[in-house]
Length: 445
Image (tube, rainbow, N blue to C red; front, side, top):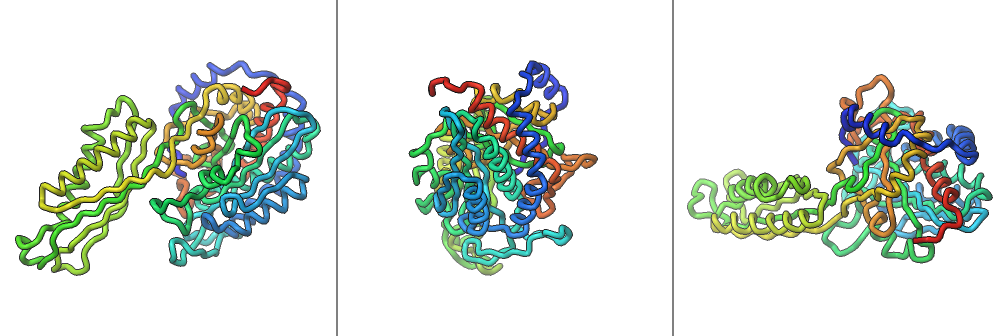
């Protein structure tokens, strides 16, 4: 997932001033700091091990075993194989109370890592039937290691916790390496929920943290819509095949496809109400033809639609279908359009974010900011549709380097400053402890 640069410093300052009153840290937070510092070196070892042995979505067998073995050693109740390769651990506190869920994603990307790091990946995997190089180019290695370390911290404090902590190690956030959208089969967060993740133990809140190109150790978030809904777009344009030297005897789907692509831009610029919510329509692939002197029969296009509002999402989908079909008909061709919902909008609940804000300020030693609205999508959205959710981002760009010029997530040059990871552990553990202890005895809503 790619996160854009943070909002201007002036707005960040307003945010901090408006939330300046933070409660003093309690004894539990002091314990978290001490325990997080004690596990930091192991945290980095885990991250490097996972980085060196990345696995694609729905293939995270080695990573899942590493996680499950660790959670069992901590004495947690462990469930494996949920969502194919997912792992869930339940830590029961010493007192009754609520349940808070913490989520980390485990999968890597079909990206080749350049040489340089002593623990650089040389792994290969099978992606959609083809062998590919594999790399943790989005930072999920850091997420998994941070949540393993958070489990270590909280397990050492279990007697003081009033409630339960659910640790969710999720596969296939980037999508399945074997299943295509539109097949009717699910993966990742959606599949975990379909298989009953929240049925036996339903959390009262769910939290997640993603590393990004921002100042090292800085935590940022926003309320409301945080990451975009994502829909997969497929268009086929069918004409009449013939000789490229006599195009008047053909119906050219390539020329028609160009008209369709241009027409789709007006769906955003002239039909979507951008004052209501942003929207993006991108065509990412176009394939058609076999020879330079043949007008082909059919051209195939794929793309993505990103939006932040369900009404806008539905209208844009309808407008895309109308535009593509009518433009194709104007040239004598035919267009077929399919739009498959992938992930929903990730929405941060304001009440939960406001409650955690002073905790996060202390965990990050005041290094916090407002996160921008981004065009990336996240299947954490499925968890946050079920219970109140909070999705945060942690900066991992080394001090002295401009985050705006750093290689972004999904780049083979994406780099994680490992000194920031202990901040993520502190934040996740402090939030969990605060959620369970601050309102101990309060009735569930």
